[in-house]
Image 1 (cartoon, rainbow, N blue to C red):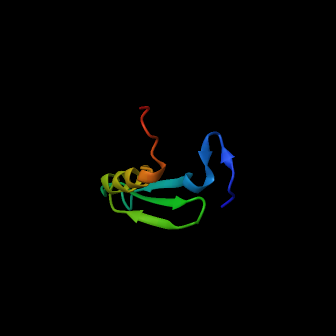
Image 2: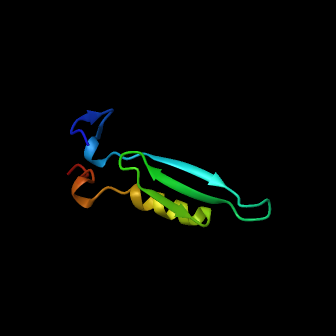
Image 3: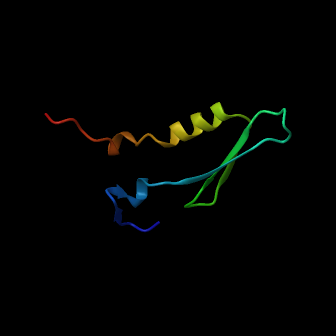
Length: 71
């Protein structure tokens, strides 16, 4: 990763995912995969709630990087 600032986001905490959806057949539930653009890592999901939990877990900043409230 390049250590530079892009539109207010530090490269070390920036991530993007390519998300794909599909059905194995017309009656099956919607499945998904998320591919990390930076690393190429692919994660498969059997349902949308699992995908959402994964994305939510990736959207929180480590405590050291959380903005501190004004005192």
